[in-house]
Image 1 (cartoon, helix red, strand yellow):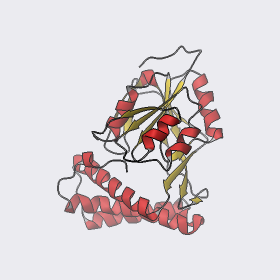
Image 2 (cartoon, one colour):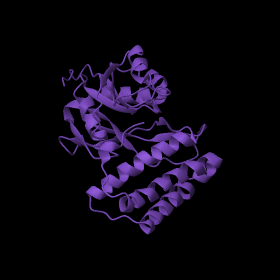
Image 3 (tube, rainbow, N blue to C red):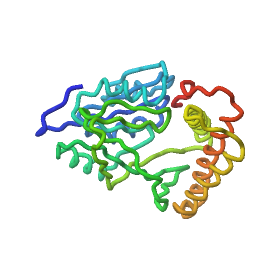
Image 4 (spheres, rainbow, N blue to C red):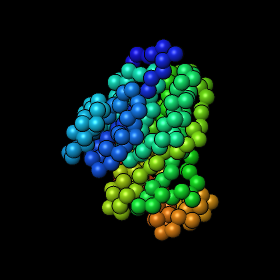
Length: 265
């Protein structure tokens, strides 16, 4: 990867895709302000790649799925800009967040930019719900070494002491649009989460899963104010609780778990 001079900071926005034809156009339109947009596709069978190319993105297809961290590392190999922002296909950069990103990179400093979500679930923006925490998405490319991890992959930076900058404005995250899509995502993330716990030597079981699911539901629905978001807020919190429960159930009952078989849908 090459970097630009400090007085001319440039930005790449990188997106991982797999059968995202229904969302990718809106995502790419929100990323159009970047100097480079790279799409790394895992072998979509729909029109994702055609739409992305038509919207001006660089599209690279890697059908051999080896996990989210590997896909992000493959994306890094195509980045030519001084900064990179990682965007998911079900996310949209608002105009306020766009301006904040541009102001940050204009400073030319090394950083790890953390951004929060405004969740949009089942047709409703869950704006009354507190964010579940930030995800690191913005990096100066000369400090970003690689990504590691099965799911919720983390960035390895050099030096590791680069400060976290918390962006004030949030991404719009269209995480759960239908019940059917949410069930598919549930199966995917259950497998990935179980594989991650298996690799760290954790044990599964129904009681462990129930405790994990109950704890996250109480935290999201009550302490993070999901109850203020109506029925959509309840279903959103319930799906996340189910994911936590089934991670431990799968860990006990599914035998050998291989994260490489789970991928974006």
